[in-house]
Amino acid sequence: MSTATLTEIFEKVIDQEEAINQLQSSSQNPVHAYLFVGPKGSCRWEAAKAFAALVLRDEKSPSDPDRSMKLALRGDHPDLVRVEPTGTQYRDEDVQRLINEASRSPIEGAKKIIVADRFHTANATAVGRLLKTLEEPPESTIIILISENIPDSQVTIASRCQKVQFHTISVEAMKAWLLSQGLTNEKTELISLASCGDLRRANDLITDAEVSSRYELWKSIPEKLGPEGYKIVVTVDEIQSAIDHAQEVISARHEEEMEELSEYEKQMGTRGSGRKDLEAKQKREIRRFRTDELQFGLSIISNIYRGELLSTPNTLSIQAIEKIQTATKNLGRNPNEKLLLQSLFISISELG
Image (cartoon, rainbow, N blue to C red; front, top):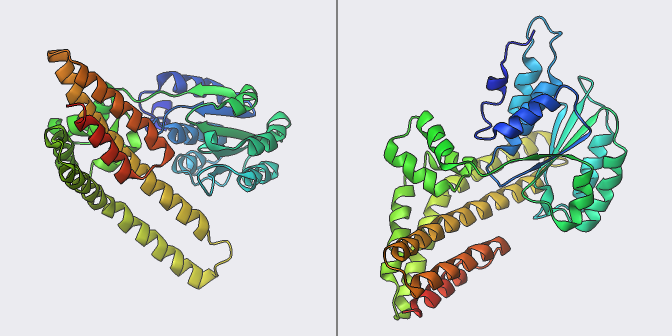
């Protein structure tokens, strides 16, 4: 019999009790398709691995009854396949990879689980191509679509799946998790604020020695704003320089990944090495990191104006908060960050 408990299997899924209960129950008699919906960093991939561990577990092996579960929890089980778009969105070729995987039989057991991450980015054509597979899936295949939302073009797809809802990790749960990692109360408070409920970002910030200085830099912005244009230019340069410095850790890891891939290509050849996929993945990581940093900073400035509004109600603070909210929404469109910050700070300065 398996020795792992349900608590141990889902230990990396934080603050998602309803989703955990739903998946535990469903693992006994899984349906053919699931839709995990929730914000990034809400443990959806971790939940998918835990669910796969329950479905793929093999208790017939006397030597290591937990082998299949361990492999699934690491994301290394041969019958657990993760598919991601090579670019910013799922296109026809990306969905075709998913369809091809669905048509292949499991390697070890009776079931095969395919996880399509960031499926909310799929275009209408790609969605249409997947619909038939979801309506007539192979009996041995389970498909999990991971999305941040359900676009109008995917309502039909969603109706073919069992929906599992995830929510932003609460401040209390985030603090409890950070304290369990051995952090001080001061750093727990700071990272809890900087992570914005995103566990993946919180985990990255644990080893970030400069997060405190970036917090102080953003906190000082309102005092630096004024009619002098050069001050805004200098301020934006300081912000970008601080983010560039913080990004060096990620860039160093990317260099190591590329060196390992180059060594693999020397030994095995370039065919099927996955260089294109790795380059796309690294670009996404950099873009996500910089967007997260900007959201972190803008939330700090917004909180300052909220504090002023609570102490002394005034129109200026309300307008400043509205402009910050608009800039935050625009981050999702991958704008030129320098122009976005300069425009925002100029517009706030003009409020007086």
